[in-house]
Image (cartoon, rainbow, N blue to C red):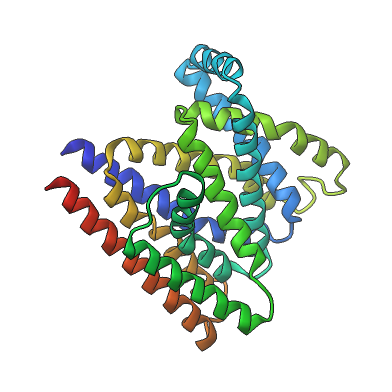
Length: 293
C-alpha cells in the first residue's frame, strides 16, 4: 500500500510538473527556441552528473555502457537521445510561438499513437475499443486539417517523436539516471557547438532569464526521476489515468494564463480526441479487470 501511495504521489507530481512546463518555456520567449533547447541540454547534463555522483553510480553507468556497446544497442540509445531532443525542441517552439493549445493536443493523442506504433512495429493485436479510439482521433486530426488547410505537422511530429522514443525505451530498458545521463551526453556536443556559433549570449536578456535557463536543467531532470519511481510503484491502469494530467494542465494554462483562444472549431477537434481517449481508457479498464479475474 505504501509503495502504491508513493507511486501515485510521484506520478501525479511528475505529470503536473510536465503540464506546467509550458508556463516556464513561455517565460523564455525572448530566447530563440534552439538556444533554449541547447541550454536545457547542457544544464540537464550538469544536474544529472551531480545526481549520479551523489548516488555513486558511475561504476554502474560505465558497466551498462560497455554492455550496450557489446550488444550494439548503444546506437538505439543515441537515436532515442535525438528523438527526445526533437520532441523538446518542437514543444518549446510551439509554446513560445503561441501554439500551446496545439501542443497539448499532441500529448492527448500520444497514448493512442503509441497503440498505432505497437500494432505496426510490435505486431500487437488491435482490440475493438482501441480501433474505435484510433478512428475517433483520426477524425479529429482530419477535421483540424480541413479547418486549417494544412496537416498539423508540428503536433504530429511532437507526438510521433516521443512515441518512437518510448518504443526504443521499451526495447532497451535502463535505470532512469543512466538513461538520462547517456541521452544528455550524446546530444551535449551538438548543443555546445551550436551555442558557440549562436549570436545569442546566455546573459544578454538579464539576470532573471539567465537564472531561468540554468534552472531549466533542474526542471527537466526532476520530473524524469519522479516518473521513474512512479513506474516502479504504480500499475499500468493508474498511470494510464494520471498521464492525462499533463495535457489537461497544458490546455488550461494555454487558455487561462497564455491567452490563447479556444473557439468552437478547436472544441470540435478536442471533442473527438477526448471521446477517443474515453473509449481507449474504458477499454483498458475492461481488459485489466478481465486479466485479473
